[in-house]
Length: 475
Image (cartoon, rainbow, N blue to C red; front, side, top):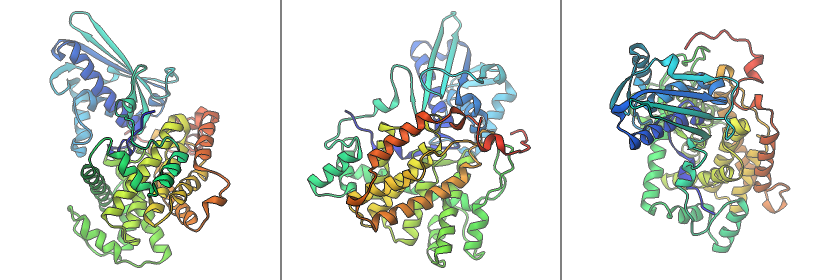
């Protein structure tokens, strides 16, 4: 059985949703690549996209239509200037034209070309979409894509997970494998992941890539605490990280232009009471997910709706537990590896498993990473992940108006605190006395996902999404 790299689970992405934004963006790009291999893009007469299932029901709130337009236009979400996304979309809508792959300008009436098939689901996965290209010679090419969560996409014949999967030296397909390998080799979980990750890249490349992700995390948090205002989408949700950061720093001024390290130094020098540290953790998480809600660049870990948990816990460890650069690398490796277990044995898609598959998984990942860096044994690392997920079982996904804002943003704060609590509990416990294993809780999460009513799976047809009365303005 092939393995998934930890860096498939923790990677640079763009808000607001890995399933509804990154996946459709990648699918649109893949379709452009597919049809360009059959004929020149210059020969295309028309193009149409149909969105199904959760992509239709919550697609507008999640920016799925925006993502599709950007993917068709040949944009890359890792490099695009995120500030210009909305103007690019308005340009397409106003002109009724789109530049396919950045090459071929085509007549494109948005309302006709991007269709939300409300109430219809494709059989393979709840996040389905169909692309159709009509050529001047009458040929029609169609392809169905599915967004699997975490920025992974698939057709019914192949998927991006398998494309990047390899057989590692010490395969770890469940928690039992991790424990067995670490015991046999007498090494830590992070050392084990280091060895297996060398299947994809050298140790130096592993370190460099980890530091790249860490820099992106720091930049994202910094942008979040430096930006005030109202989030887009019509709910009129106010950004809170800016004001919380300001109060915690006692109104001290700092350079808001790319001086991340100065700001971190100031955070480290603030009062270290339980209350203040707790507020900082929430501030870090809110900062990331407010950026995510604004189509900002974030680190997907393992999804975008849950993108604030790992950054918040990692920044907490860096600022208040003196976690150094090597510790950051090991944290990310362990967290990513735990994420692969959920990806392979359950799901990280809220459209399949509810929010337990997003915040729950991210909390388990963060708990494991923190436990590793605070000196936990391999058994305690796995125990921490189990504790964190155990107390997210059954968590529903019910975004109001389909926006990744309420309750999504606050849930990242809660998931972060649970992760730290889970790590502390595991560090003070004997795993041999534990009644529930990580493998058992992953299996339970998967069973719960299958039993959960679809209205609680990112459809905005249940929970807070229907019980909270809001007046929503147009986006």
